[in-house]
Image (tube, rainbow, N blue to C red; front, top):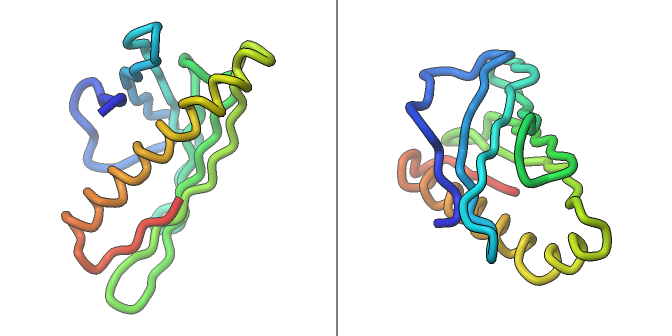
Length: 121
């Protein structure tokens, strides 16, 4: 996996919480990524924003919805790649695919942990 969480995860997300990751970038190796939980609407949604990392912009909103038999989680991600045309080429070659793999893995893990849940990206 090209993505690792550093340290222990808290029991719950709260505004101001900082989360540290390591992301593997082709040809550059592992790089730090720090996100901050910007807001939490308990049981409804929360948003994380990149503070340090590989993106020019990263805003990730997680929305939770009660559905029959469980909870559905939907992700809305707004991001921009740095480095102009070179970043655009990198996005086409591997960034989009890597993000897809990360969210596919998370969906798989959520389905294993919570069999009646639905996760969408």
